[in-house]
Image 1 (cartoon, one colour):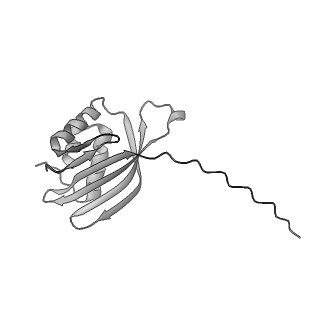
Image 2 (cartoon, helix red, strand yellow):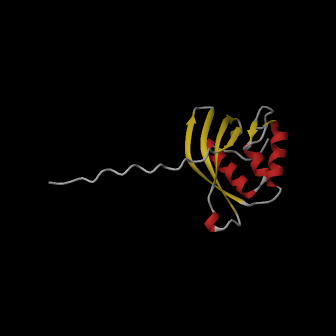
Image 3 (cartoon, rainbow, N blue to C red):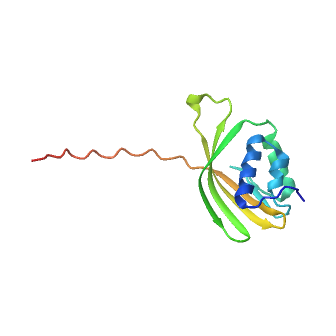
Length: 148
């Protein structure tokens, strides 16, 4: 069992994103439940199940070291006594990116947490590339108003 206890699902989520930014594999795996049925889907990747596949995938992702920052927006959290579901927008910026080019890379993610005897633990992380935002169509100009 991992020694770290997350008293709330939000605490587990915060630890997940801190580990992601630091490329800290042990801290990342401390967030996950120790169960063979845990699931992780990275953007454009296959479904990974169990701690071994998930650990291996994060190890590959982290192998280059810290290079991205993630800013979470648009969180929608649904929670009950034993289960919590967080839907978020992950906005990644890459280190070394020129400020002029610093457009965040958007990802939509769903994180599912289970309350266990060892506190809240992640059981599902499913991330997908966010659809491109549509350009706002220019509104037709209103005819000028004439005041009498």
